[in-house]
Length: 489
Image 1 (cartoon, rainbow, N blue to C red):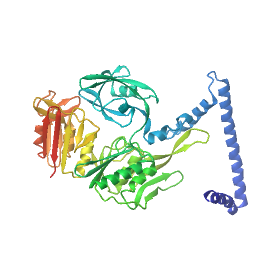
Image 2: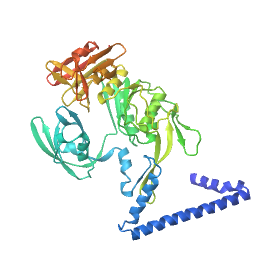
Image 3: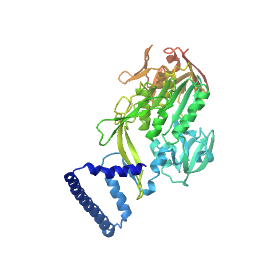
Image 4: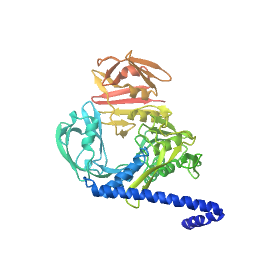
């Protein structure tokens, strides 16, 4: 029906045009066709001569891919890309959370680089790697001699079926493991329920399955009596616009999702939600510098409709969207086809989403998200390699230091617990934690002693000293374990 209607429109349109106009159109069309034919002939001629005469013996396919890449590069748009036929699935797989890897995450503490998260059913789990294992050597290179980027390079860039030797330290025992790279489906959505009935949903990518998994997570949390929600979009580089809109439909019945600006249209056009559902609960949305595109679209929607408090750092600033088009002749074209604005028509491209509460750091941002939802009790349990918050294990290590009988933690962590701002004055060597109720400066010593000290660029504050500023904070310690308790009742 659609194709027939289109044909009718094309056939009927010339009937209302005067003969002179029609003739003019015909002449222009013929001229245009001749120009296109000449350009196509010139392209084919150069392609044929280069493939025939050049000393390199480059094939026509190789030269054609280079020519197509040149067209894309001429637009000076980092988001418009041409994928050769052999790489056409790369973008789709990345959006859908699928890539070749081993299936574990690393973290660093004073003792070295260790495994802080392993995904189920992956080569890492099957090969015997465990959370808490320290990496001594990877691919024959000592980890202690490698920067974080260099270590990532050693571990990445492998093909499915490649293997790598990893020497680990588990307790006092050294083990040599051999792991084989495989295509891994990484998590798209995960969820938990914190004490205090605060739901937590992390969306890693806006793939086609993300909305279904988000809906299941939401339903499960609601069945457990969730009274508020955190949506974590940190490090989420985006995905499909339609999926971001589907997620937004869980929070509002009717309203503008975003505005889109397309070629040839003078005014931004609204994209509306018309049959959504109101969650009716307090919500925090967490973002960071790597939250981009569809993540920013969702965060901007929640912010402009005052449906959530946005917490974290300013987002990436990708306010344009692309169409992904499989080419009939082979390969894939990803082309920027529109710019989008938030419901209040705020520009996002090269600007980003500004959070309502600005805070950096993995654990610090999560704590501010929990506290913004008025959690009454907060318990942070810290060990060498594990962190628990209100009995939920977190894939992040929070360091602390025991000096004599005193315990020190990073000043940024304490500022997050106090819902405070933190300021550093290099001239006076004072770190100030400023909240609504108090403003305390801690003189930072270069020696590991006193109320605070500076080590490796981090300000460490003694818990006893900070407890005087935040009386609702208490703590207990046993050996290499530290528990910080905060009461807001």
